[in-house]
Length: 285
Image 1 (cartoon, rainbow, N blue to C red):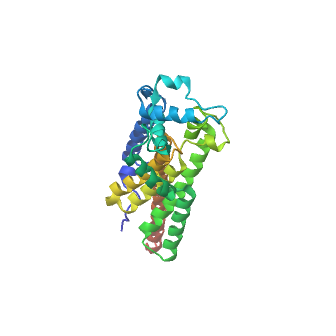
Image 2 (image 1 turned 90 degrees about the vertical axis):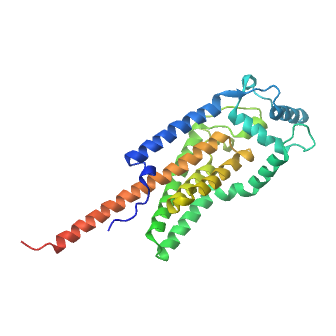
């Protein structure tokens, strides 16, 4: 009797159809990340968010040296920088002319209390506990296998994300907002240069993939919740938007890959077991 596959072919990185889908996603996302990181699409003139930042800096007379926007960046502001400037306006006095709108402030308020729901170590521990509980209570094998794939997949993604953080050393938004520096520091051990990719977004992507494998009909809800958790890192000015995009995709892909590997391992074990059973019941010649 055939068992339900752990992952559908459309999401299976080791199936030709799934591999094609993932390759398209990676190309599109990589192009989008490069576009948002490096292409200046916003003007620094007549820019309310940039004016608010400059006004904030002018008030910081006690800082030495005073932060200033990099001259090169004044030629145009990238999507990444613009979104961080928009989030930073929530720190200004609401009475100021270029302060954030009430709706933006409300979003940041919600982000403040929901951003840590996708902490990497917390999500990893929850997946492990649910997997152990499902084995102890002998729950449906479907739940056991998805939870194991989620735990191992997030573990793999976390290791990869940490290695990339150290390797590329991208400065966090506070390097720009409060220190006036916008650069990358390769092989950095400084926490302020461990921005890319976002660990919270990585955990969020892994969790969304687990939920999609468990309850595929609810994928719009899981995706919306996961994207919100990733967006909270931008609203809190802890990560650039592209940090969260890369982390989310890394987490989701890692769980899908581990689920595919476990599925093939299980299929090979079942095939060997069935072959052994056939040999045992075969009549002796």
